[in-house]
Image (cartoon, rainbow, N blue to C red; front, side, top):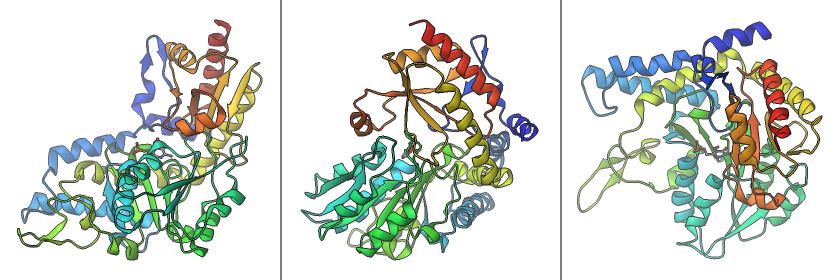
Length: 405
Ligand code: PLP
């Protein structure tokens, strides 16, 4: 495996960066992962050779650009095992995908008094869009709690369903705790009550095989930039029957069949939900990121990340005063922690001086921080290109920083 990782690292020139006089150790992969050279080069190539607006022209370049964008749609469709390309909507990211569903589905179908089930471990991207809806409809958010290890309280989840429940929306993997939620079982339960489900897959899609038909998800949202891909691209998978009955959420070019001042008709799926010029260059390049993941193998990626997680956790637990938030069995490669009463920002700043990139703060999960009664954590998270040697560097740096307090 070591030689493979060495080879993989060669595909990511940014990993050779230095922070001051230290080599970069990039442990902020949950926020965004790095992008292999092949993807970066494909973006430059597209700007040099194929930049023309999609779906608008009869000219050759426009058709080539359209073909490349639609190739990615087919790749994504296969990648997540959707039943057709009309179920794949390009967005700017997970956040926009969830906003789309809340605004369109929620805006059209929720009524005053309806209830939406979320969990306490949600990213703000899966909380605030539902709260924004409350300006239109007096809906109530019901929140599933966790235990101290970070496991969802599944019995409580089930008990929250009642005749007013109209929707459930939860993450597949927590960006703070690393907990992998039993989403298939949760979806099956919601469906047994006739309730549709959105899964926030922002943290699962870089690590797990996603099969939307096996999960039986109604909506599944994820972001390219966390999957070794370009920024500015996300995907909303939606079950065709639901997407068909949902109204458009943004109006503009591309999403119409015919416009007049008297009456406008809308384009078929998926274009009904893609108003305006999409980020067609990055969408085209996203296919290369999927190639990278498939070539590397999700099983290899997961196994390598698990090895780093286990090794790093064991080393961290030897440090006096160490508290790790999120210890659920089978968790993903994310370690959120605090040491004694040292403020996470101080730890993060000093680690940066030693070349280590970790994230500090509330990680866009303030309700979860409140649940633990803490202002924030330091978070180290791994990707396929990280190494045990980097973990050693991190642990040495961490001990040094702690000794300064
Ligand atoms: N959901 C989860 C679980 C996340 O971790 C993130 C980003 O960190 C998001 C949603 C939002 O993703 P994006 O900023 O790419 O829209």
